[in-house]
Amino acid sequence: MSLDVLSDFKASAQEANVLFYYSGYFSQNVIAAMAETIRSRLAGSDISNTQRKKIFSSFVEMSQNIVHYSADSLTPSEITDGEIRRGSLCIHLSEDGYTLLSTNPIKHSDIERLRERLLPLRDMTLTDIKQAYRAALRQEQNPDTNSKGAGLGFLTIARDASAPLDFYFTPAPDDPTSILFCVKAII
Image (cartoon, rainbow, N blue to C red):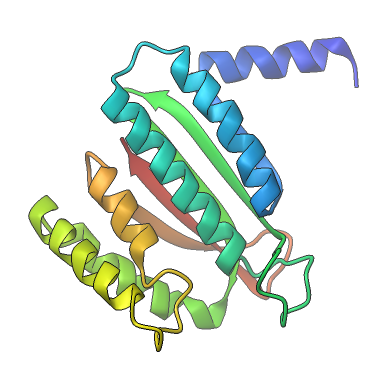
């Protein structure tokens, strides 16, 4: 790879106001390293502490969703601790604010479950989202809950976003048996 290619890439990222971009395998250790980078980048910006916290919180939740639910895993399916799964995450400054976009492969069988969780969030007010968040916190404290977070991740992102969450499903270009699940939040 020549230095010209790297210079072109850097120029393109700066022109697009990219704060952070990663595509590859996510694990708790990778998320921790990325979090430190994002925290440093945000500290060097002139945005409010509240907005920094919301961006950081949404980044963490989107990353956790990739680790818990991506269909492309390097770990055997019976391992739930120390999972390593593939996805992408981008944070960039847009006209509307900071846009966070996450993408990861999912199984066809997961589409309806995700759609059922996300569609109601589009129509909820901030008050509704906060009430649902509190209800999900109570549910998470129930030891009979099977979820890896009782749905708190999407509620957290929706609570922090300045516009309704956008999401879509598209066929994965490199694997016809998988679908790419994309979530977009504007903070």
